[in-house]
Length: 132
Image 1 (cartoon, rainbow, N blue to C red):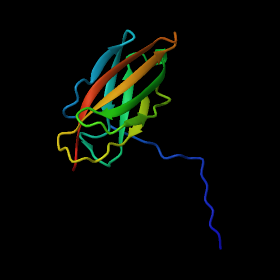
Image 2 (image 1 turned 135 degrees about the vertical axis):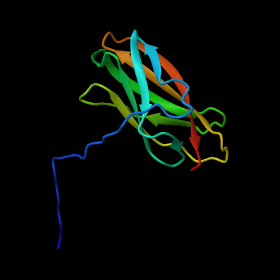
Image 3 (image 1 turned 180 degrees about the vertical axis):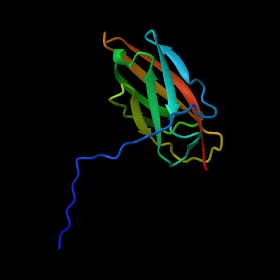
């Protein structure tokens, strides 16, 4: 016996975007736009997925967002953040930080924003992560 199921409906990811504890900046000025940088959880916990949202004061001008994370106080390689545009115009990426023995781990998140005039600007913020 074989069971097959299909659906056209994808579950929606609803998040309540917030600025997390210890985040170096929640709002930055990029390409003459105010950009909000928020997460779906209050703290980043090792080996637990999170969602990061990049939302501009003028989303129609932003055509691309790319980024990655790297350890600030312990290099653990570059962790890519694959941003996808939402129908509302903001960008979201799912991320994941690794576990390490450093209880005060800081991560630098590098983000590049490209506008519809094909101008790009890169900036970074730092966020802490916790083992639990």
